[in-house]
Amino acid sequence: MADYTVNAPRPRHERARTWEYGLYFGVIFLLALVTGVLTWSWRVITTGRLPSLGPVGRALKDASVIAPIIFRS
View 1 (cartoon, helix red, strand yellow):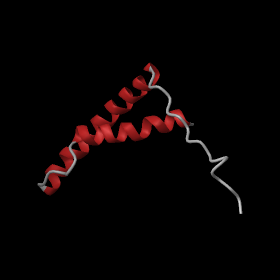
View 2: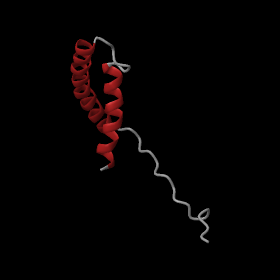
View 3: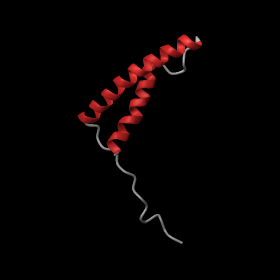
View 4: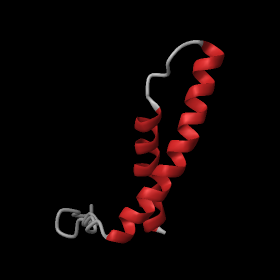
């Protein structure tokens, strides 16, 4: 039986957010905001109900998911 407590895999440290990350995040956020406003307004018009997450919240969520993927690759 192997002892994993001695050579346990270390988690990757999170890199400091740089200006480059902020630039990518901002561009992705703006693109997601435009798309989010369009889809949010379309959904309000067609269904007559407000979605649970607004366009700004959705854009922040999308940008916070997509930007780290770009830096991981």
